[in-house]
Length: 407
Image 1: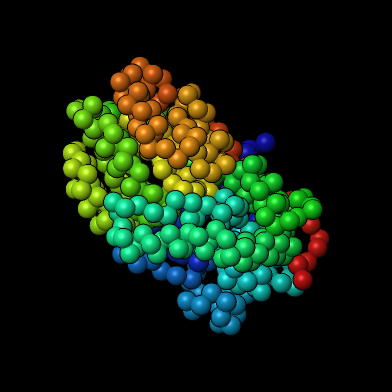
Image 2: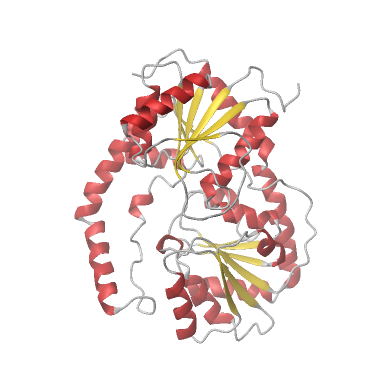
């Protein structure tokens, strides 16, 4: 049977609050990669979005994109227009790529409720994310005394009274997603018990896991590598970019022929530059918001220092280009991607010194680094577009064979 064909013609609407610009975010890139694979299988796809991004970047989507009229996701006008689009395009399934947002779920739920349209919610974050946000809130080099005091108070409040309130809301949201969707798709099998625990679910039959597919077409890689370390992420608190600089501080004098590139923009970029100056670091280049592909191609080592992730899309992107990952293992799906000591290195504790030692060891052992680079590339075959798209097709077909109507 031709695997590029789907048994029955399906019409899928993929929704996200943000526009589907693959240059601005991981969810957007994943959605476009999935869409390209679905098109090859003769599936009709449209995009539905609310918000146009602040970045003035030209891009083209592989399918039509419809914008809802109001910034308020759940407005009456948005619901009315969304329903019109679904009817006009004969949509069978809505895939909500913004399911972590209560407003986005409310919108899609109100649109499909009482119709024959099936509803799939995709959660692109670790289900326990709310427990991780203020794990390490203080940095005396990055923030002023006043700012650190405020962050400390936020951390205490979040960990105790506010966390209890927030987790109660998260539990309600997860239960609603489960009850009001035909299927809830998570990023890893490891996320299923986490979701069930937070949502206090007794039944998990509507939960399933599909890894993110590769952002770029997988092809043979023959890159000329430089002695470069890469940090590529949004420069925000979640990504903890300062840790990459602390790692570099430990080793830059021992690696005179190496340098580090910081690729990404965000609200902490100016602070990060000041931190680099304060630490008297050398051979650090801040590139801001750039297409990361050229950096993946020329870098040998990739750092991920986040407090939490859902999947870590830049991680598999780097591995596609034989850039060896050294990652703080702060989220469960990382163990689906990196086999410690084989295709990368996992730092089991949030420890910059341990990470620095591992990077230094790799840089000083080029044969081991090359072997890991080859294994990193091989590992990405597990997340090739064809394999992941087949899993999505199976989920679409399963929900389409269900006769129940969401009420």
